[in-house]
Length: 136
Image 1 (cartoon, rainbow, N blue to C red):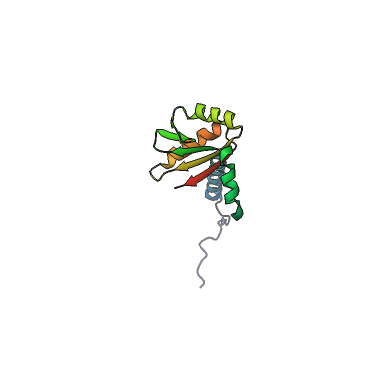
Image 2 (image 1 turned 135 degrees about the horizontal axis):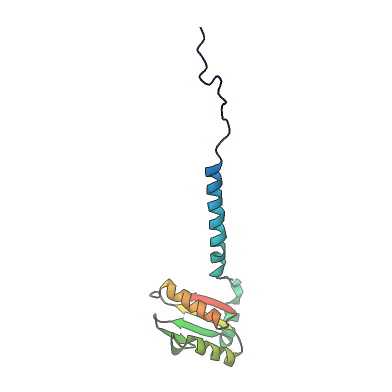
């Protein structure tokens, strides 16, 4: 005698449950939509100079504003001490004097990343067109 089929008379469901896969995909799409603008908001465009331009950059130093971050509350703008609160007005007057909107930012080892980003953001907000970063 043959064993009886347990599913005899019942309809067998062969389709896969797609609900968990769809849920995960939707969560990934929402995360992508939310995080994409954040990635572009704080982006810094870097451009390296060709090997022979070191001497040309020395000649152009008079046509740029040099900003050195000394500590969390003090800066040097063209070797003149400036407080962090007056950075915007000082940059505006330097841009007017020199007729250019190039800035060279130099930071020491003790400066935090947050402080550096704040200075770069303030420089952008006050009208800098090109920002170069030099590390010590």
